[in-house]
Length: 116
Length: 114
Image (cartoon, rainbow over all chains, first blue to last red; front, side, top):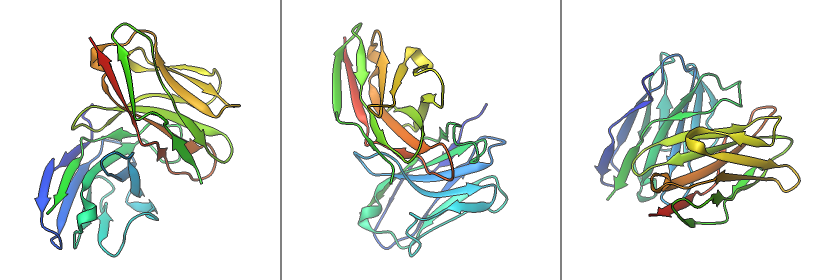
């Protein structure tokens, strides 16, 4: 099966600019996650979708970050305006169902964001 | 709040020797526990999970992990390390009831020397 697809792989922008990331999960996976992975740390959940509804966005900095999954398939994560501390790898993951907490998540290769 | 501790930033082992990567956790109630591996410039790959039952869990690429409830630990093991096992390993936990996010440790770099 095809894995989780993310683009772009790398992005360099200046602070206060905006940026968007795209994710296409594994076919049939109802649950989609966006994580932020700062160098030297484990991934931190930003937002979780179940189909096209938000399950958890408690750790999403909503003053600058937004995400959508309009048709319950692919998703975009946007940052506007970017700050230096947003430099990180942004990982998208999917799983069959968020209700099955024992199900593993499948990760894309991420987008490495550098803020100048 | 749930948490994961991976006390070693790096583990060094010679090829052919057994390896152990340590993980301890804290969670309300019973845990679901996971190990993931991350190669350079790649996403995380699922290795194995503990849900219930046998405390020794077998996973991909010859890895296994031992769940110890009294010590709240879930150490990753492999009997004979390969150079290709060199990567960053993450332990993760979530509660097995109610809504719970997956909480990751900070990761342990495993370096296997030839």
